[in-house]
Image (cartoon, rainbow, N blue to C red; front, side):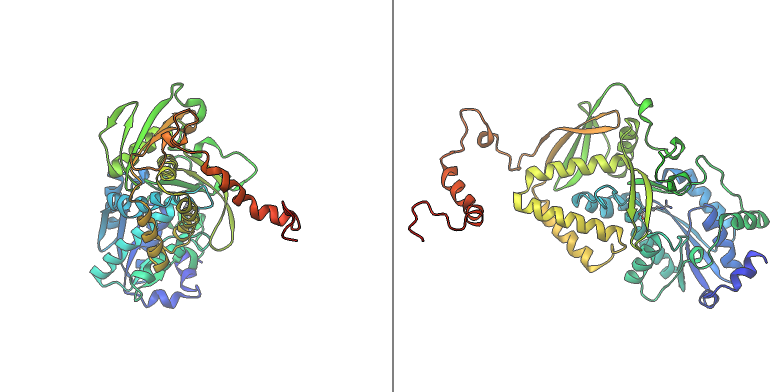
Length: 427
Ligand code: ARG
C-alpha cells in the first residue's frame, strides 16, 4: 500500500481531514518537506514558517533555500523569520540569569528554541486564519510537548498536529515517497544523526549515539574540535555582565566588538576551537524515557559558568542557596515544556529580582577542552578583601567569633551529650 493510502487509515485521520488551512514548522529537511506535500495530498492548504535561531546548518542562504523549496513544493506562503536577537534577549538571557542546566549539564538549547518558534507559528496562523499548527516532532522526545503546551498557552483555539508521531513515518518510506514526488533529499555529513541546532547549542541524537557504552564517533561533532586538533596556546576570554546580562567580551585583552547573537556565535566558534562544549550524558526525558544525548554547546557552557561564578560574589549566602534551588526548577520548567506558563513567569520574576548587583567581569582560560575561571571582579560584590585577608591588617575582629563558636556548637553538643553540663547546675 502506498504511503498516502496508509495514512488515510491512521486512527485520528478525521482530525486532519477537518483542517482546511495549516501552518507547518518547516526546516527544509526531509521530514518537514514530506509533510508539506502529504498535507496537501490530504486536501489542506499549507503555509510554512522557517525560523532562523542561528542554526548553522541553515544559515543565511540555507534559509532562502528552505523558502524556495517550500514554495516549489506548493506552500501558499513561506515565511522566513530572523529570530536570533529575540532568542538571545528573551530566552537565552533569562536562561543565563538562571544558570540553566537541566540535570546539571544541558543548557536547554533545543528546549529554549521551541517556545519562540511556536510564538512565530501562532502569529502566522492568526494572520492566515489557519485551523492548526503542524510540527515534525516524534512522540518519543520532549519537543512535541513543547509545541503542544506552547500552542495551547498562546492560542488555545488552534489544533496541534504531529503527523510524524501519528503516522509513525519511517525514514525508508519517506525517502521512497520523496523520490516519487521529486523532493530533493539532503545528503550531508554525519547522516544517521538527528540534529537540532540554534545559537545556544547543537543537539545530536540517534545512530551510534544510542550505543551508550561506546564513545561517540568524531563525525557527530561539528562545532567542537577534537582535542588533538586544538591550539597549543591558551587564550584568555573576559566576559562582562551587567545585571546578570552578558554585555561584552575581551579576548586576550582586546575588546571583541560584538554583542547579542553575533557575540554568542563568535563565542561558539572560539570556545569550540579550543575543544570546549561537549556534553555526553544519559538524560531523563519528560515522558520518563532515558536517552543518551550528545550536545555541542561551547558558548552556553562558558557563559553560564562565568555568570554563576560572578553571581556567587554578588549575592548573599542565603540567596545563593535559595537561587541554586530555583535555578534547578527553572531548568526543569524550560526543559519540561512550561516556558509559556505562570510558574515560569514567576520563576523569571524571581531571577530578575536577584540580578540587580550581578555586575562585573569573569576571566576564563580556554585551553585543551577546558574553560578554567581564573579571575573575577564585581565592583558592587560582597567579597571584601580587607576583611577576608589572612594578613595582619584584616578589618575582621576575630574576637567576634569567640561567643559565636560556643553558640554555634550548642545544638550539636546538646544532641551528642544530652546530660552533660559544665557546672552540673542544670541536673
Ligand atoms: N533531548 C534534547 C531536548 O529535549 C534535545 C532534542 C534534540 N532533538 C534532535 N532532533 N536532536 O531538549
